[in-house]
Image: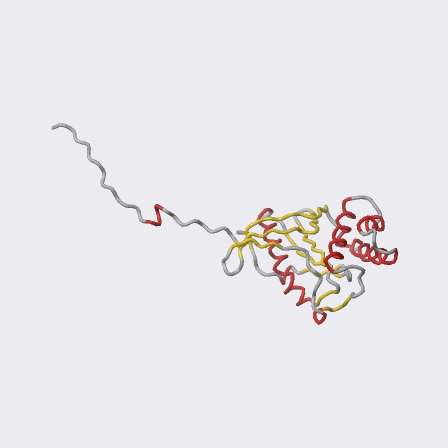
Length: 212
């Protein structure tokens, strides 16, 4: 008998296979420099007589700390270049604040990188995944240890609970992004309030975020 081709029966694929749902993009969380606007009741100490508005002052101090780490120049020259319109007395006060921060022992240890951009997907405790974008003020690396240092130019040093509430999620997210890139590293997160200056190591108090 002649060979006859047999056509396979047509089976309609379910809609979900023919048009699979798109995986939604993670929500992007972007952190920007703090505005220094902590409520007075949250402050353990207060510096209310700074020469510039909070946002401008914060930008200037961050820029001064960044330049001081990268170039061999006196802090007084850096501040004069960044804020030439300030009076001599006002510049002296800014220089004192920046130099006091740079004198902290923790800032003298390990290899240093400044203004480090970070981007990565992070999983929150509720299972949601969010894309984190931000900039770490300083990274200190020594052996397998990495320390995130985030400068805060709030007009005062907040109480610890308030600092954790305001900044804990930000540092935890940065730590999770770095953990995704360096899974074997020991990563610490530190806040440095420039108005003290005062350091707060928040490792044990941060939310449990992890790389996605």
